[in-house]
Every structure is written in C-alpha cells, then in structure tokens.
Image (cartoon, rainbow, N blue to C red; front, side, top):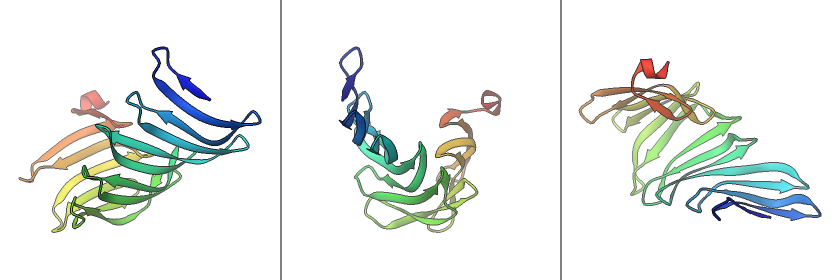
Length: 169
C-alpha cells in the first residue's frame, strides 16, 4: 500500500500479504528520503531503523525497537565516512568511551557516555562538547567549546534549542 498526502507527496509504503503487514514499511520525508524503515511479520512489529539526512545526504542511522534507539547508532561525516558508533539499549546510550573519526578515517576525538550524558574531547583531551540526552534526543543543558576554549551554553527539550535558561524553563 502506498500513501500520498493531498498534494501528491509520498508519505509511506507498506508491504501487505493476506491483509496483514508483511515485510517492510517505509516512511518518507517531504524530500523523498526514508526516515523510518520498519519490519513486520504477520502484522507484528519486529524492529526498524531510523534514518536522518542533511541536505539529502545520510547523516545517521540507528536500529530501533518500539520507537526507541536499540542497537547501534552510526553517524556519518559529510563525505559519507563513519564519524562515530554508539550503542543504545531501550533508548539509552551505552556507557563507555568511543572513538570519533575525521573524514579521512583517522581518530580525531573521543565521545564518552555516562548516564546519558555525552562529553566530546579532541585527541589531546580538550573539551569540545557536553550534552545531556534522553531517548536519543538532546534534553537539558548543553555546552559547546570553541577552538579558543570559549564556552557557549544552551538548553534543549527534545532537540529544540533555547539560548537562555529563561526560554528553556
């Protein structure tokens, strides 16, 4: 079954057999890229994959289980090479220290995850970024450090950015 919106933009494609979802269901962004791919067997959800794009180029993909990240999230550099791999379980990042890669494949930093808080450093240990996450979304206080080590603060609710604490609250 294929569904379109009123203007003719493709919304979804779902495979059916004997009146039941059987196979893949694909949900589409307005630009035609797939943002969610789910597998069904005998009308039962068996897992899926969330896909994110930046200007039509795949920027990340993550295994999903009931709308929560569950498996590996792979983020990509602009040239398509792997930037990072972070494990998730039931929507929460796996605690640990993971390598961050430059476009040429060399390690250019580290991502340390503890209790759904991520800290990114360069290879010399200089702090670049700190953030709090909940169910694969930025939530709470976030800091970005410039190359001159200037600290820029912000706040997030489900990936929506607020510059000041007053806006956030």
